[in-house]
Length: 417
Image 1: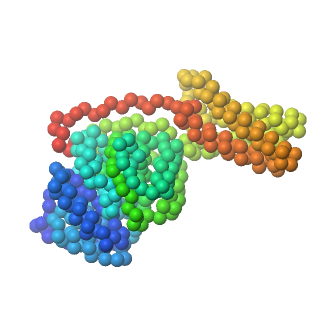
Image 2: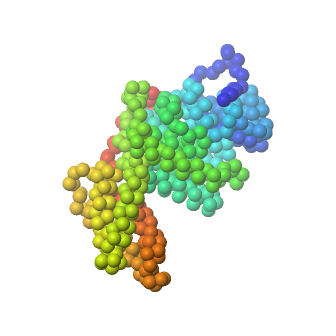
Image 3: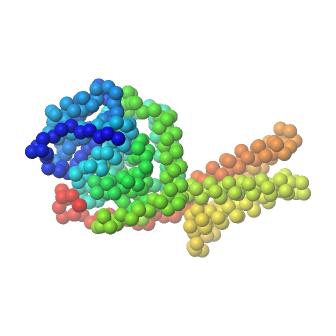
């Protein structure tokens, strides 16, 4: 990969700033000067700390690199960096890994997020109350204007993340984030994605390893000229979720960072942290196969209804026991009867679904084996989805450990590094 930066005379190299803001761009020549001008005016007038803007051109095919170089020549606090490959994650990796600032951040070139949120974004890092801060369009107090399709996609994606990883943060992909540079540079080698999933993977790694993530509600207006391919990005994100879930399940997300980041307070890991998805899928698949084997074996002797009840109850007991011990790591007797009572309630819902499926098969063709298997498979999928939603949220719900806030620093404007 070729990396080019705009030339800076040796005697004109400025001192390291507190904050470096990275603006990744690809074919944005038409809006770049306007956006960077607006950002520099805001920082000069309303931001009390030292700063630098780094424009990272990701293999643009228009005049973006020329425009970025001009802006770097016009403003002492603006730099330009050129990469020969696309990818937002690639741009952030290249800029953050070479940064000498205390805090690194990034924002989208369209400036969809109200810039008045920048100081609240940086303040928890400066005061030492947080390690990572993110702008959130889903936090209480946020005001968002965007089309229904992007709203549905965003909420669905973030809800899926919380189901799989049980993460505490709400909005993984708002283009408005900041973190301590020392933490960023230690996490970057462990982040595999180079595109849009980069944000999510970085946040999941940071939270899994106990670093404090603070969400700032933002005012956000959708850019109608956005170049993001929503469908393609969503598919890439789903592949990223699968990859990270398997990695966490295998224990690869637990990083030994204490040696280089001594003194940082660490939160306990969120329950689940991705491994639940793999364990749930494995137990669910085995349970489904066992259910159908028992049902078909008992059907001739007991009839469809009784065979269904026996097979479903037997697999429910094994399923719940496996999830309790393996998926959710419950070994003690504490709360066991409450968990089994809740699991029984969900089991009754599954029994109702499968009984209805049997009745439907009788109505269709007299309950032949084919109709029974097809309709029971549909009922089993619905029942599995219900268990997937309710097991972490209700059946095996566990209160998060208390986390006391950091003590108030004596000098709030001094970075805690």
